[in-house]
Length: 172
Image (cartoon, rainbow, N blue to C red; front, top):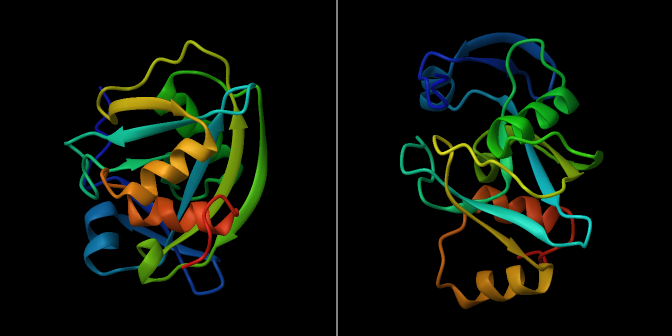
């Protein structure tokens, strides 16, 4: 069984221009706030609803917070390859289509990650990975905005940055 929080998992380390310059274990990357890469994938159904997921309590960052599909890149891995891999690992399905939406620069607000943002489309059923996902929901974008604004649920702050970057949420 894959350990999705393996502190020794090798991650690609990059410079301030997002050029890969090495690798280091996850625990070192996070502890030293090294610049690294990640993807966020906004997974939609053909009817336009978004799948959001509550992170497992086992996650090392933002456990039990709502967010989208996402994950780190390994050494030499391309962003798009990682995006497709993450959808398959987390939801157990292969996207029908995907498209690049934009990119967030690495900063404290992104956890020192350069994040490429993708939109993918899947059809039900999905098979959420219980090691990654405690719960999942299908929401309209309007419902998502209302839930976030109500402040009754915890959302990963990095996911909120992603939603702002693609225009789903208004900037701060």
